[in-house]
Amino acid sequence: MYMIIPVGVSRRHVHLTEEVAKELFGTSELPVRNPLNQPGQFASTFTVDLEWNGQVIEHVRVVGPIRPYNQIELSDDECKIIGVNPPERQSGDLEGSLPINIIGPNGKVSLSSGLIKAERHIHMTPESCEKENVVNKEPVEVYHNGKFVFKAIIKLSDPGFDEIHIDTVEEKTYDLHTGDLVEFKKCGK
Image (cartoon, rainbow, N blue to C red):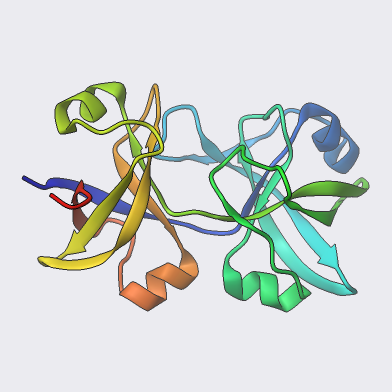
């Protein structure tokens, strides 16, 4: 039996600590532009520029709320613009991540780490995990229109909204868009 879930395309964004937000914007209060599907998460009106190797990516959205770590998520195409190849990781797994410079209206912060390519993942509530007999960090097979597409990792989210997150390169590669429905099942079942 397959579980049906919606697709959410995750565009480039940054998560900031209170300290770094204050340096970049003069405040750690992130104004809300719009809420995201994951409870408590929102796109801020604030954006930053990212700089490395003399190359700049402008207008990268800040996603709130304030985090205990700084994390920058880019797609493979965006990484090529600034000439970097960061590891593909789950959110919060920043060991071995790359340095990056973040530029805001009030200043520039040079981070020694924090840049990753986000690994595709499926946000699931504890109730959904129990119902589907899957656990946090378990790989599953994802299907669209009955055809295998790729594997993704389960990400326990409490509170949460059941949804698969892919990046903009995967959106183009697999012709999957926000709101499309896919199915997943345990590997090898």
